[in-house]
Amino acid sequence: MKEKEIKQVVRAKYAQIAKQDQESCCPSCGCGASSLLSSKAVGYSGEDLERIPEESVMGLGCGSPTAIADLKTGEVVLDLGSGAGVDVFLAANKVGPTGRVIGIDMTEEMVDRATRIARDHGYHNVEFRLGEIERLPVEDDSVDAIISNCVINLSPDKAKVFQEAYRTLKPGGRLTVSDIVSEGTLPDEIRSDSNAWACCIGGALEQQEYLDKIRKAGFRDVQVLSSKEFYIESEECQALTKLLSITVRAYKIRKL
Image 1 (cartoon, rainbow, N blue to C red):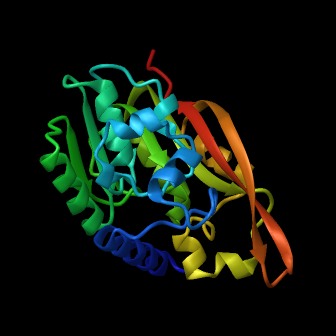
Image 2 (tube, rainbow, N blue to C red):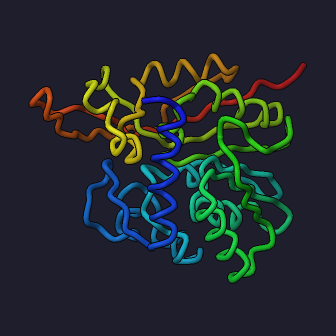
């Protein structure tokens, strides 16, 4: 699939979710569960979810990067693919009123929804910007931490995403992302399926390739903090394809 086609499909799917309050069908945690149950299944604590607006919890993630990002009071945090703002609001509670959290999403409907939620619930330390994660509308060396939850797999140019993340981080800053990767190469049947792309499967890279792209962007101390396997059925191969939901942490080196 071509880059333009992939982005059109992904944007259309998440615009529909944002407008219709549609329950997600997350391949890493199962289908049919409520947004709240789906979020708990991938690592969000019930206590944390109770402290943020319910409308922001849409069950779209495959992990809980905010919980292990070691966010500190006063820090500036950037969320890649912020959706309705669940991780932005969680991060905002951690960095406090002296900190700031910026959410970037390419779907206008999601940005509008998240902005409305922030306004209605009195969040003054958050901001949502419309933009693509391959071209972040964020200044160089301006954020302390970057988080992302099951979004980078949707990008057709993941190398560019990690390059942009590195650019925007301050020296010594850290990247904590949850994402879906594959064990081995995905069948062509899945890679060419637009719905599989929009559901966070078709764009999944093999795990080592994914980690190599992070390193090539300049990051150091790249570590897989957690890994959970699941399987999807491939009709073409009449077999199960193994995927992994992983959470990765990496650092931008400090200047001497």
